[in-house]
Image 1 (tube, rainbow, N blue to C red):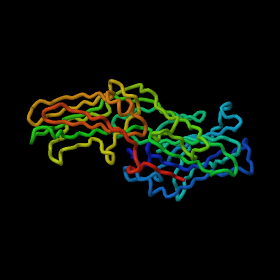
Image 2: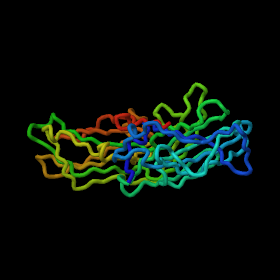
Image 3: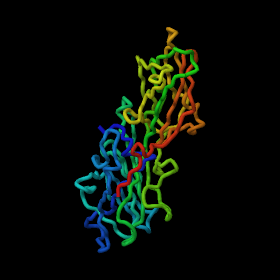
Image 4: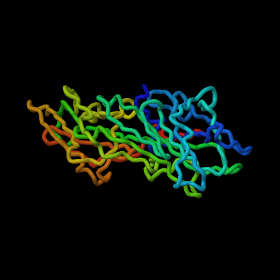
Length: 354
């Protein structure tokens, strides 16, 4: 199972796939002598694409959609589809696919790639890709999806005949970290009995479209400041639900080094991914805990949308949000301002396949 691949896909993580682009060789299409083969080349992928589960990108296929339109008809005529959910796999020492395609001069080509292959039923029309997504029953069933786009004009003899894909995560990643409040009385401690994340959007539609690159920009996926493919967005969720609920926990916190901190979703072993969305007043974390010197459980509910200062009240694709809170024997749980970061290189973030 390709569960949570922090590395091979990522926002903050760009993975780049090198796909040489094209047009199919059919009887109703021109066959100029200056057409160029669509080929794949991969440079030292294995050393840079280690997944959380120990696999790498070359061990998994990705799916490509693509179309072409005459440079004179961009925006006025429907493009001709040349890739339609074509599976691209790594075989031997190169990326391969069925039905050879070609570049033809005088045309503008657009591409969208989704990895891993075969996980969603997507629609591709007029250079745009979209698919509905429903959150699975359990958070650990979420597969880390990455997307890349590319758009360019092709002129014979100018530039590389390859499509450079820069992949980025389309989900957001969350973590919750509990720490013990050292100001609590000596020799005291607490036990966290349960934690749940409720009211989160669980059904949405993802859409992306290649964005034109300025002449000064390198060939590849146009991204925004967060490293996410420009033109990508999630719709407002149409359903909400509980993302996780852990009951009957026995997480002990005290002043000792061994029990002073607990991370609920370690990135390397158990990452938590969610649909990117604007946080509503329904999104809350509910925690129960028992102080060592008391019998009854204390219940604390924290509305995550109140922490808008650090991330503008939204979870963005390819970004990580860590919610840390302190708990002590004689006080309520105190949440710190959440930390926002990208899925960085140390986690296998950036990959270029040439």
